[in-house]
Image 1 (cartoon, rainbow, N blue to C red):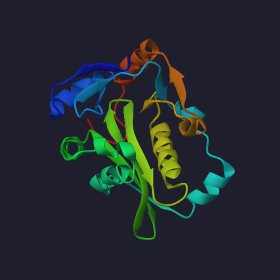
Image 2 (cartoon, rainbow, N blue to C red):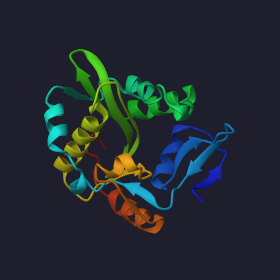
Image 3 (cartoon, one colour):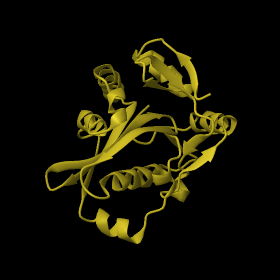
Image 4 (tube, helix red, strand yellow):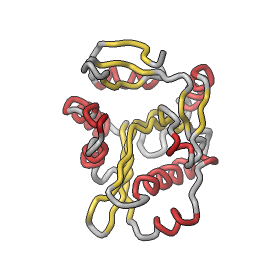
Amino acid sequence: MDVAAIGADLEVSTVFAAYVAGLFPMHLASGELAWWSPDPRGILPLERMHVSRSLRRSMRRFRYTVDAAFADVMRGCGEGREDGVWITEDFLETYGRLHEMGWAHSVEVWLDDELVGGVYGVEIGGLFAGESMFHRATDASKAALAVLVERLRACGGDRLLDVQWRTSHLATLGVIEVPRAEYLRRLDEALALPPCLGAD
């Protein structure tokens, strides 16, 4: 079962400990807070990221920043989605605090001066736990992910980009599934690395 536990709180220390243990928080349809550990787990090996020729062309029209509009990216990820309810005010507050402490980061995609896409997640050591991404312009979310992967690859080391589940859309970008045991092994190795986007 993908749900490992139900309850607890969204204190920064609780959430941090969860990621280190291979868990992440998300509400159930009932509204209860659950801690998830999918089996199999979706990950994106950095060398497998597929950037098509058309995406590369599309990417040239955008401008990119890191950590320039973290809260706006989070809110964008909850727009117009049936599951957007999971990005509640308490999630915004907790992840905002993680961002202030250097543990959560965002990549923003701009078209002129308008925020049109982005991705955010939690970085602990060599783990980047991708939480969600959004787009308001064609290819903007894929472009955000491609820029994130580029930044992580430039830092070197066997980094772990966790995307939680492998969807058909993410599969086209190179996402694969690994058993929970393998994910936890990779996580343990990744946590020993220095962070890339943040500082110790």
